[in-house]
Length: 110
Length: 118
Image (cartoon, rainbow over all chains, first blue to last red; front, side, top):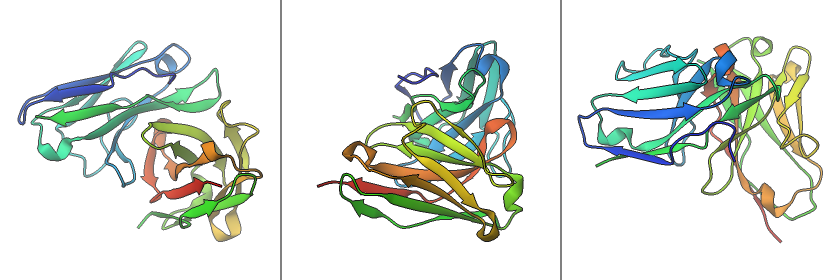
């Protein structure tokens, strides 16, 4: 069981918007920054969002992040078939003194 | 260009020892933590532990503490993940990653597949 809870799967049509939630607690999301990753099979994970809502250079503004209390959300607009991947949230857990990831969400672009 | 280059795939037997590596280049190696992440077959990412290359200070996930050892040789900008006695359940892809702002990870190695089978 992951410390952070994500829905196992989400789906939407090309061009539409989708959101992926990540739920935690005060020891992790509630008091630490959240990051989001895109992971395609056979490749290294890619950082999409850091510090809750910042995008690294090269990440399009179709990807956005937000945080409220002990939950965080990744938003993807203008869905493309190339966005089909697994998405993970991550943060630091102050109680564990360790990093934690969510269980991952598989995005299907129908 | 920042790069993390990991050692190649390994096939080992249960009970054997193993050390895999992650060589950083293109940045000040001692400035950023290196994290190790596991992905078991068909499963998600798991944060295993991290090391501060400047002083070798480590943090481990409770799930991995005592089962693996993370070390570093800053003279050759390389971090290591080590097992003393492998189990079949250690079969996985292992990634190293550079810890960036807010415990995010901005650069990742290509992954090392470890297969443990009798």
